[in-house]
Image (cartoon, rainbow, N blue to C red; front, top):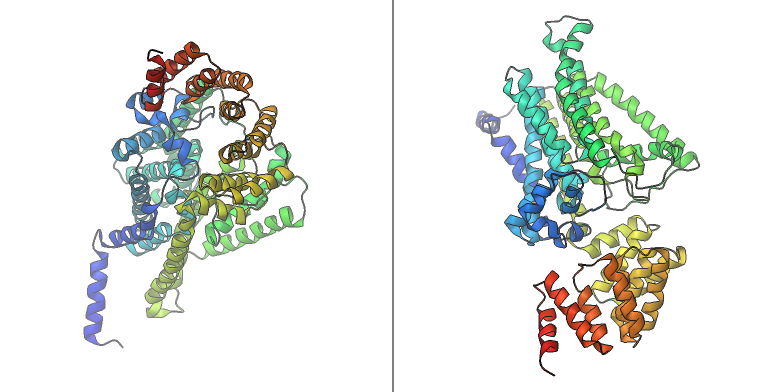
Amino acid sequence: MQPSDQRDKTNSLTQFLEKNGVMEGLVCALTFIAYLGTMTFGFVYDDKPVIVDNAAIRSWHDVVHSLIPGASTRVAGFPGATFYRPVTALWTRLNYAAFGLNPAGWHFAMLLGHVLMTYLVFAAVKRLTRNRNTAAVAAILFGLHPVHVENVAWLSSVNDLLMSLLLLGSFLGYLKSREGAKLWMGASIVLFGLGLLSKETAAVFPLLILGFAILFAHSRSSGNAGLWPAVKEGSASIPYFVILAAYLLFRGQMLHSLASPIAPLSWTTMILTWPSVMWFDLEHLLLPISSSEFYSLAYVTAPGFENFLLPILFLMIACIAAWYGISKLANPQLGLFAVVWVVLPLLPCLYLRAIASDNFVHDRFLYLPSVGIVILMALAIHGISAAKTFGAGGVRVKWAIAAILCAVGLVGTVHHQLQWASNLLLYQNGAASAPQNLVVEDNLANEFVDLGRYDSAIPLYLDVLQRNPRFWSSNYNLGYAYYRMGRFAEAESCLIRAIQIDDHDPDQFMVLARAQMQQGKLAQAAQNAERALQRGPQNQGFHFVLAKILEESGKREQAIVEYKTEVQYHPESAIARSELERLQLPQ
């Protein structure tokens, strides 16, 4: 037996932890500390087009304009895509207004968002279980789950974070409305609508509400069995389905598409690939040992044992284990609902046509589904502690298990986030995890070029082109690298080949024009500069380069016109203004 003074200390600590705000505060503090290192990270990967080079986030006018379907894709940095995410556009504008291009501020905002999400998990599980200890376990497992690193460390992944915050807030509002606080139903519906405007996959949320209402219908019906309680409770989901229908109707009419196909896949290929995708997701939710923005998972066109039958076998075993484990829980209904929470948000990710080709699985897709996983884990840990086997020591067993999982999660979180510190680390990690991915190798070579390490970059470009000679990006990027190295003839050859593959990008014409100007091919250089301007008439520097070519060709008056146009479009260009003033001086 424990000495009385030790028992008193234990009881005092327990009473202190049970006070409102203490456990959730500790959980949020530990989560914040785990990701504190991300505030030293810079802008990486898609952060450049989405944030750094995105002029649309610099003014409130563009954010208001983003309320128009199609415009929000430009504010989000992805023109041409069928996204409608004005909430994300507002987020980027607020961050730019507050922090400018200081990445530390942006990362601080992302970290606060994850900490808030962790708190909401605590609040939701506490309301579901009426147990603060179970809520604390679920929340800390969520806060330190290594699969969340991409959602916190990568600024451009904010869509999933915002959507998850809004949907979990909506779910909490729904739970409060079930307890008689009817005004919370209105708040819940509004938050759901905002979730839809953050990311399209929020469309599954009404099904979550319907599933919860049906599963817990009899708990509020005074023991009455039958269909009527389920119908009555299920009717609470009708407002959510009405909002969803209005959203889909509006989206269909304005954007003419519910999901924009990116990858040209047949339904057969998608269906055959589903088992490996689902097993990947489940594996990373339960055992997030590896982490990368790029994975080597491939489409399944010919089903075999490893790529089709084995994932199905693993999924069947997981389903049987889950069913058995849930049946042993004190609250199997909540366990079943947790499974529903895992599965439903993953269903939109199975429409592989809407995800970039050969890079169709991502940790960020697992942010919202992981709420269901941590609920299951917390319920299982509570069930172990309550087992008669451990007797009075069950509480210590529970916290020991939670502590071990937290320690593992903390180590994994800190380790996995290091790759997001820079583009070089991100692409090196991606090349190691997906060696067959040409995009990763091309991006890694680009980073070496930016660092001036041409001896490392050129072999990577050549390796990509050896495997796929018509890979446009490496043809263009190799040409640009040769231009920066002063190897103008080789640059010209690569750029001409890139243009023959795809002539839509204006930059390739302008780099080609500059390479030809350096070789004295002024007529060809002028022609390609004009072709660049046809595709990007207001691109910065384009009129300036054409002016230089015309000046070297002896066409002084035409050069003055181009310098004036450059200054007109880009008045911040001091060099263009200086060159214009020089040419306008009396001869």
